[in-house]
Amino acid sequence: MSRPVVLGLTGSVGMGKSTVARMFEALGVPVFDADAVVHRLQAPGGALVAPIEAAFPGSTGPRGVGREKLGAAVFADPDALARLEGIVHPAVRAAGREFLLDHTGAKLVVLDIPLLFESRAAGATGGGSALPFEATILVYAPRAVQIARTVARDGCSAAEAEARVAAQMPIDDKRALADHVVDNGGDLTDTERQVEALWRQLTD
Image (cartoon, rainbow, N blue to C red; front, top):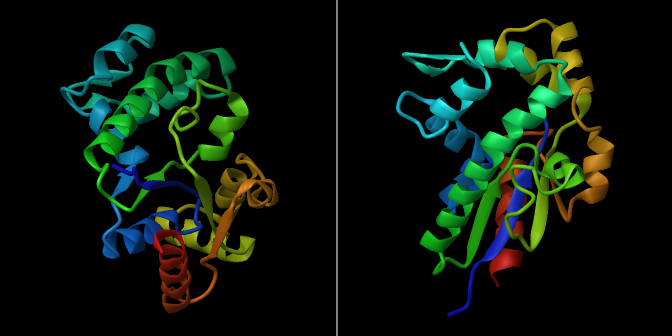
């Protein structure tokens, strides 16, 4: 049995990666959502709650992992962040491999991994670096659009949005690494046309 073509989907804050992921789902493509997996594993009863509490005492509670408390524990501390990644990323990779096994009959599968290129650059500890894929898709939007969307979505100031963007890998670096780029800077109809064209290209 032939295995599906596996795509790694990524973007940056405010680019509309989740919107593009839903467009692939609407075309019948199975989509693995790495962020959703992390939220599930860190929720009450989740497999990551106990190991995260052991590594970062006081970061969990009745609602599972307290993301603000955990963020405060690892913010600006590369060693602490590396410890956290050593707990989270193997679990995400395992979930991703299980997802691929569950969809071996599909023509195309998308792995939605926010830090896909950052993970590659960091080596094997990255959340998506050990998952197999044939090509990568970057969802792109101009910086002004990205800032405006981030402000509207998160209710933050433009300065806060700019700081979040500045903390991420530069978008031009991601574009250089991507095999395909979906321009999500315009209206959704145009984005849908791009996604459908890419879907046809990869499934024909």
